Length: 221
Image (cartoon, rainbow, N blue to C red; front, side, top):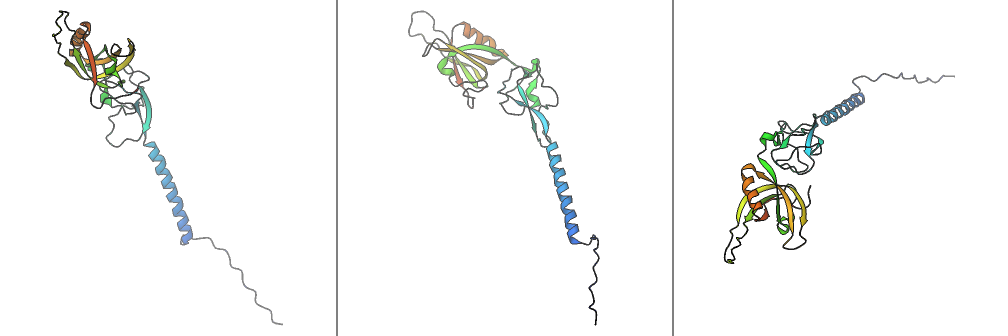
């Protein structure tokens, strides 16, 4: 009886570099590793900077609560912002306004000798202060008190004494509602304008604050 030939078993062979499946697999691993490295490097590109915690006005002294830290990715050449890898410069002063949430430029902070304004408290008609908030800019108009001569025809001209003065704080009102209601407002006044304004206040002049174009309104901090 003739015996049937049995098929010979094929030996398994190791995949070689010429195996396309092996090459594709290696390439996928390399691509995934490269993308992961780029993602990590991209996250490391962020740098800590100081951001205004509230509306900061030229003349404000920097306190611990003035700034908050934020990690951001800055483009090349944008190192003009205050880095937060060092403590906030408390005790220094704002030399220009920075709105809440904005990055703080290095040029916006300086020493006391760089501040050209002084804080003055004035009382103004409450109607003219409605809507003002810290960081608002106002024009200040003064109407001198009419002389007590009994001459009803005597007029006291109103003149603008300050333009675009920054509001540091809006304080409490007094005198009830209506025309007699007054509000105390702290404003930053250029040094050469402080004396005329104080003289007007001491002379019981009427002060009217008119918001400048683009002034902050509402109850902002």
